[in-house]
Length: 584
Ligand code: ATP
Image (cartoon, rainbow, N blue to C red; front, side, top):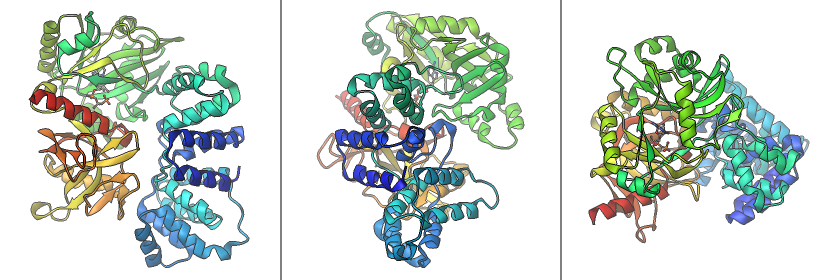
């Protein structure tokens, strides 16, 4: 397939915003691709090269992207730079610069989708010494053969800024429309995606095997399942009412990291909440699974928690940060031991347990997980009495937990869903404070005084999952340890931008912008209306967004969350409304 065909469809997609229209154009695009190119096409249309869980990241830094453009356009660096700043978008800049150059390239080869895809894959995978130059060469050669329109989309893709507004769900709609006769098949496609979150695979299956093939997509060891998520309510009474006044299953909510554990014999693979492979962080957890979980082939979920080896006490999440290192992990395993608290089992041998009720899964879990100082099924209580549940929550907090996750015993495992079948109950909900928020760093201001030479405050955004935008919600400067003050600029360096990145909405202009990447946990005194911040603009009052009063960084970097997993604008609106109710 020619890349020019893809680029012109991208231009069409970009020009419209209605979901029906997007779906129609995307369905046309999918139908026009040969089957072996469908998966790459789907990844590329989402600005990716592989499903997220394979961890292939594009996101070339601004500086490098500009160098490639200098080389391919033959223009001076300052011309390239000023064109970029003028447009505020590297794609449009590339298009303009290559238009000026285009007379010279009459003999260039036409680009195919395959060539663009393979080249970008090589660019993404190159690392180590000499990789910067190699990436530049690859990219420049692609741009040499690109038309201005193609260059626009190549540059946006390679910098991680291709934002066509095509959400995962739109791709599923389009696949249903293109290959499965439309809307009736939609829930089947979605189920397949939730248990096998590789859009390229799901679309290619729809095209080659039809509805029956999609229906047969199974939970599989080695392929992570989208996690089931919890809603929140502020009292045990409200939870029991919501679940229909029956006995509910309350579990300790541990303050650790979620692990999705895939085991096939002695091979154990650990996925994070965002479905990245993190086996190397926890070699000891993999050993614990091999030794104390009596299922040879299966998928389980557990919260991994740092413990004090002498007292058996649970330690806060921050202690797990020491496990994030590339080198010296064996030492970290010794210095920062962990325990596994299993809370679900999704596959055992050949049986897919996800459609089975929680109560049955829990029974199975108790059968297969040995109770040892380092492994157990998470403490749980079945009760319909709110007072008893509140008491259990106090016990949980005394034992170093955040609160409870209350589960509906009749509910299947609903992959990828945030519903009231699981409800969190934390202590914070009952005090003046709102729950913590997970916000995306979208900018920073230079520091003064003690913070001169580094960033003093950060601008934070909430995710609007309807529009795909990151909207400003607060500026935060407190809660940073010296270590974090020094570390943050390094974490953010590759995402820095001189212009407001596409998809970021903020009236406040920071000294440096960042492409959405880093997610941090923030606590605040309350939510307030703000004429400046753009989060939930006009949702509660015309001309006002929602902001945070006295925001403070808790010290937790949520690298188990992607920016799209950050607290959404809808959640913030709901929190604001709950807070207003409490005041009344
Ligand atoms: P999200 O709900 O999006 O995961 P979050 O991580 O901010 O956001 P939390 O308030 O931490 O939400 O609650 C859900 C998380 O709680 C789970 O992802 C899991 O890591 C953790 N957790 C701890 N104990 C349990 C348990 N017994 N059952 C389910 N999840 C648990």
